[in-house]
Every structure is written in C-alpha cells, then in structure tokens.
Length: 115
Length: 110
Image (cartoon, rainbow over all chains, first blue to last red; front, side, top):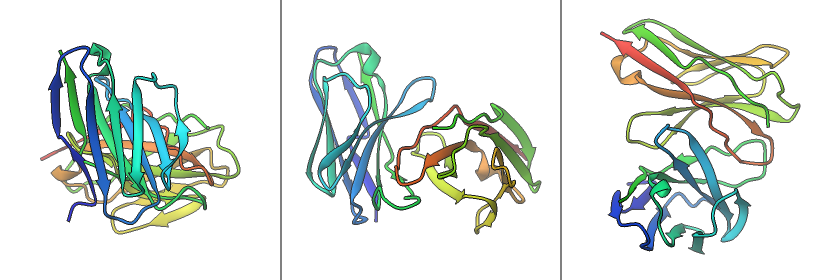
C-alpha cells in the first residue's frame, strides 16, 4: 500500500495554463507538506498544513495555492504557469509538528514541465 | 536554523564502510540532527536522527560529539543500492521544518 501518493506523476503543459497536483496519505498523519526540487536538485519547502490549517507558507508566489479538503489530502493548484515553475514537486506527511521530531514521509514526486 | 556543510560527493566500493561528516557549527540547544536519503526519481527517505552521542538503527549509525557542532553518518558495508544523495539536516525542536542543502552524492562502485 502506498503511504503518500501523488497524481499525476508527470505533467507537461503550456505557459499560462492552470494545473493541479493531488496528494493523499493513508498514514493517519496530521501534517502535510509541499516541496519543490528544481533542476539543481535543491529541495525547498513551500507549504505545510496541520489538520487542514496552513502553518508554513514560505516565500512562494501567490499563483500557488494549496488546498486541504481533509487532513489526508493536500492539493496544489498553480495558476498562470511559468517556465520557472518546471520542477519536481514532492508531497510529504508527518505525524505532527509538536514534540522533538516528526519523521516526514515523502511521495514519489510529480515532474512538472512548462513549455 | 543552523546551516549544514557536507561534502558534495563521495566514492566507495561495495562492502566498505562509508562515513559522511556534516558540520553544523551554529546548532542550537533544542535542534536535532537528521539524515535523509534520496534515490534518483524518488522522494527523500528518513534514515536516522539524533541529539547527541551515538544512535544506531538497522540502516546506519549516527555519531554526534559532545559539542554537537558536527555529526557523522556511518553506513556499514555499502552495496550498489546505497548509491544516492544523503542530506544532513538540523531540525528545530518542536518545529518540523526541513531545510535541505545540496547533500552528499555517494557513488558505490562494484
């Protein structure tokens, strides 16, 4: 059983389009995240939700809007796609944010290519 | 959050022990040291985490000296499948925000 799943795995689209990436976790975790890994392979956190509430919002263009319909899902909608949005987007989840540490479980990634 | 510095790349051979050292001079009292592994075309995977001294699990060992300004990930008897990027992270206690650096690209050769 897949713990953290993302759809689609690959997404190729034109500049200016709007697209969404979906993420689901079946681990019963309270917290979910979105990361972006660019062509230089640097992983950067974008957002984090805890029990459907936004708790981390890094400096990300407002064209990116996360939505969490329930604590098992965190979707990422991107408006007016730009060439620089091309990257691999990873979803992750963890048990929570409190305590000394909470291991994050990552999904397989969605490779977005903007033409 | 404390910045981490680790070698960009390392090479090893099957069956050898690999030690990857990470420096984190500005680590704070409530920070934890965490290591993740990433294979090509996959998301990162947690390996090990510690606060001080030594931690061992079925995959690796983590050595942290008393001053906690550095840490060493030890992979015993590596195999070809251990070829991956290894990230050293300092995680602020109670605040689960992972800041990834460039990582160490480990190549294991036959």
